[in-house]
Length: 205
Image (cartoon, rainbow, N blue to C red):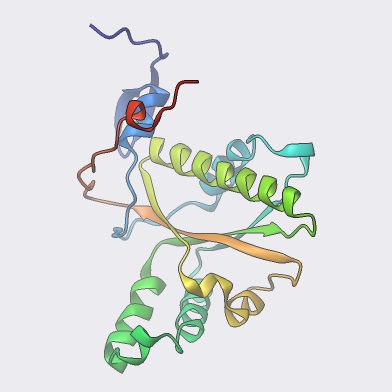
């Protein structure tokens, strides 16, 4: 029998108390694309971020910052920028106007969007270190949110590189967007997809 070496914690997942180890949280987390109408508390997001930023980062540069859209007009603004930013993509050109509007409405109705921004470094090595650090913050945030029954999808679609999208959110010329976290509460948890075992990816020297 495999020994459980992880301490078990009690979390409020949705409206139920569940007992999970860190390993349980990592294995149970799913990317969520469909949300219900329950609003997401700004205070909760800030609380989770204050824990998430305890991620490793070289030189304590803390290269991240966050833009939150959870009010109706802010979400409408983000959705409009997203749609405008991808208008020249081949897929969008083939998409009927009604379908484009439906897509915009879908993003406008999502409970919250968190845009994660990092400062660009001229030094390539520092840039890679900082990107890794910001990715750690995002994963910390996803896991912390999952413990609270809050799901999300980390989007890195092409629009995050668009000048239209970046300028519309006041992202500076020396910054870049690492991803947009579309988030909310959900009614159905997707089934897990299998992972390749670590042994198959492990080289012993």
